[in-house]
Amino acid sequence: MTGVGRDDLDAFTGDAAGGEIMRRSLEAMAKDYAGAPLGDRVRDVLTGRLGIRELAEDSEFQAFTTRGMEAYDELWSSMSAEERAEAIKAGQAYEADLGRP
Image 1 (cartoon, rainbow, N blue to C red):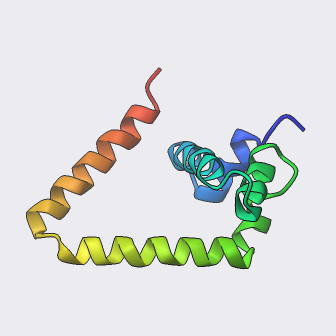
Image 2 (cartoon, rainbow, N blue to C red):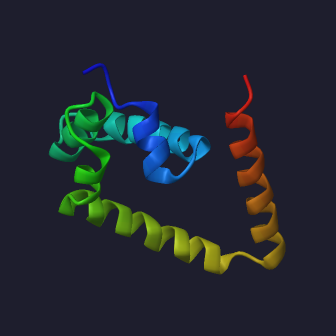
């Protein structure tokens, strides 16, 4: 296979922008964890040898995402209402930019 199909990640995340964000995140993760078992499994998803749902069920990937969500929760909790509103606006702008040529 030539790689995970755009439709696979779009379907998994619920839309094209989410699929693109997921793809970019997986590419960064594969680079950061190159040579490690988790990085190999992420690369397998990107090349189409492993499904994204299989990766989502992987205990090491689950531990990684749990740590990330805990860090995000801590950061979000420390932000003021104004900072949260700005973060939401920035995220919406980023997502909108993904759909532009």
